[in-house]
Length: 478
Length: 99
Image: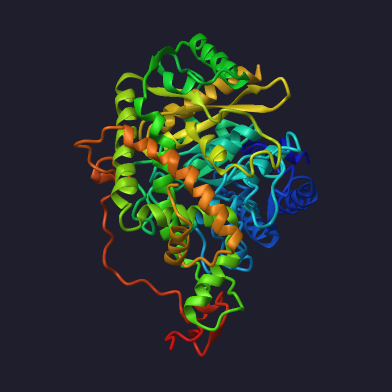
């Protein structure tokens, strides 16, 4: 079985024509992923029993002539910030090195109900904080395309797993670009849906007003199929939206004629690199497919980094307060009093990036600074969201880069947190506005490194976004 | 300097983070650089702009309140299963009142 070549449709065909069983695929997929993991460190843990249990159910359904579900037998990798009952979930942190969740995230429940096989948990930056996957307590992930380079972050393990071919699709989480940027670096498709489109129940909270769960796939269609499975209202997440969920994959017909696309001048003005050339080439493809392209303006863009890193760290400092050594984390052994135990547990348990963000978030929320930083950032966020709302009066979608540069070398930026934050510029604007955005591969640099193009649409307009990406992807296959 | 060493120690205290001397120096320098960048926000006029605390899209989409119906709780044993120091059905912690 050629596991790296599998698609959701190919798995389905194989199962329904009885060329292989879901149980065979579950075992073989886990074995293959385990063997390949030495190269990339994409996975922290495998869950063969769990994959096999779902696979057996799928095989029984097929034997009885029942529909086994849209993800029947599909090997799925899951970022380790999403909880899995009975399967250790670390969030890439020493604090949760031995944490066994007592419940499943809603996205996991829905994947397994749809027949998907959860084969393992993927490495990530600690509590999803980072853009290179170098902030994991369990070692960095290597980019399968170029092993001396980072896979991007924070969902680096999930992107690498899909790129390496050990999983057909994967779940990541995106707060400021953590699905789109690694998708771009590893040459796969990564989707951040509308805020509230996918339930976050069971997603470990980083910045609650910005956190999303999103799918990865080697094709737009596979990512779209996974998105449909996990999307929709969930009583366990009050922020999940009621809006009906379309059958995204069925709507991908390659016809995007007449759609209006916007190119933000603020994004492209500094982009003179190979990345910029590839984005312009992709825009020409859209023109040939019958789209109308015009320049648009998102004037508040220059303020987005400052705005994002105030809001995200403020929320993180509050969300991460729960890791206190009492209920489910590692506990420092060097403490005689409760307050020492808190401080030492957190001091010994958190890595440098988490500490930096907790410090920054606590500072911007502290007395005397709240208005100047946090409140101001919330107002700027409203302006950024207004920019997008204005743009979508004029155009159906926005085309943009994902990252200013392709995958960089391990260790290259690790000592310069500000440079790392600044590289998030193109992804955090969409996150702040809560709109759907995705990365789709749009070519390679002269060094052979993948570059992703970002497509953004208005709230709940995922269908338009995915149709554009799919139509573009078809031209790249030819 | 945007932030003094004393402020770094104060903020670490608020966040319940024990920092080494090296970390105090490193974070003072990092936070300074980051806060200098954040000063950019002073340039943009936000007069009359309402702060955005949540993504807003028609309250009908998200302003749903569930029925107040009790659901079965997690239960004592699973709730304690990950505790670093459970005992007698409780979470054990070091001495709380410091004398």
